[in-house]
Image 1 (cartoon, rainbow, N blue to C red):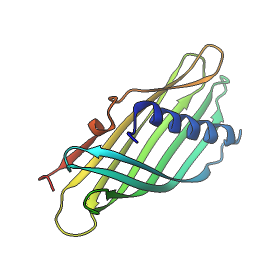
Image 2 (cartoon, rainbow, N blue to C red; image 1 turned 60 degrees about the vertical axis):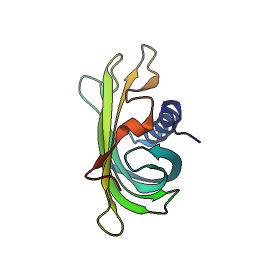
Image 3 (cartoon, one colour; image 1 turned 180 degrees about the vertical axis):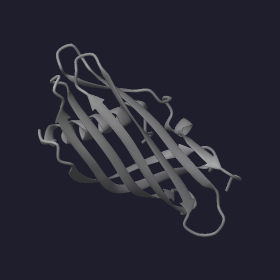
Length: 164
């Protein structure tokens, strides 16, 4: 299965909708845990198919200003284990993703995700995964998610150092 832009949008939409629907109306920070398995996806700079398991925490809060605009702030942190399908090589990664959302009609919210992976053993290549999402609220107040990165997920992964 090739991981595509539409499958990433689907997962991001589902998670955002779940988190948004569970946010309390007061000012308190809330915490939600998540985990998922994904892949395989071809990583050109490593020369193999990769799958990964990710788990982490989302800290988020929602509040309303005196002007009656709602605001939503989130910060995701996670750990991942990436496994090479062909070689069995393993990488450990840590990531984070800050984001914010302002619910006034027509305004735009966005978040970025950054992950850096290092080999579990030896001096193998490290790599990074960067992703940017952009989402809006339409004139009817409906949350819409638009993904801006390249179509091919492989374009979001860059090796740092020599090819392994």
